[in-house]
Image (cartoon, rainbow, N blue to C red):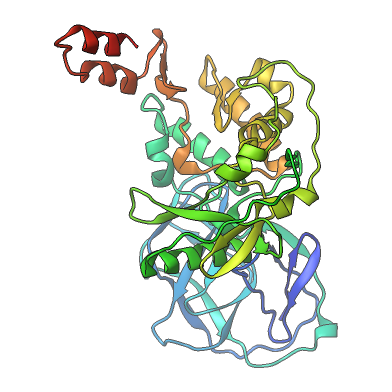
Length: 422
């Protein structure tokens, strides 16, 4: 059997001393490895491995499929590297060690979408029993992200209705090629070094508040949010003299968003004069590790500070736009229009638009920035941008603005007419 390592940024973080054990670590984004000249004999018995859920894998895409087994085997299972046939094409399975209820990588090497039914046989594995020593293990990195690929249904609602099926698949393949540009949770968030924020104050008197009172369910939510931020290196425990209170804002989904009340700190902050919207200014780089302490906030359970720029700071929009402009570079004069976190890529054809997306995805991936797929729209002939509706027919006020006027109550006197006119 061959041995596996898991590496992160070239650093070994997990090794197996049993049959080529390779783990997908939940706490880190890692590369899947394989390689293996050292061979020991394997037990002859093979376990059928089924797909636990139905899945569709696009052409030339690698995805992770959760596996199940009728025998409910406990322990590691070795899956030998192989190429298998199924209706519609072929797929590769890289050699790996997994567990029942774990995942294996499936690479669709055909030109068609491959559909796997629930409880369909996808591979066979051998229970791992023997051990090999760590010094017998050699490593070879296979660059395959552990992030699961998006399926066509994941992006259907984000695509323009004017696209045909082939064009939809081309967009899907591009998005999956840049899968690490899209964050679905805190763990997948990117981290850029393009710009660092410096908080300059009018005086050196710290802003210090006691935590706002929270109901018990709210306190539990805050505790979970903070622990998630700590686990992902976004905040850390603080001993700063600064302490801004936090608020909870309820989302439409019923979940809470934690917001730091930086109003008192903002009143003391020297304003960043970087213009909004865009102008042709030279970009400068700001440094500010000493500003970390000033972002400190307090909850009923502790005192913390941000290691990445939070929104709510008065200069956050200017610093963020500076970073976006720096990343886009010359593209912002020819290809992309950006206003804070709204980026518009106008194009006259599908091919041009696909090329523009590839350019922007490449720049943002290299800068360590990520998008949220649910906030993206691709290849729409009509869309809302900065409160305006943009379409082939021109630019007009957005629906929200028109509805505000249409639903405004009819004035009944001079005072109400003046109110309407502003």
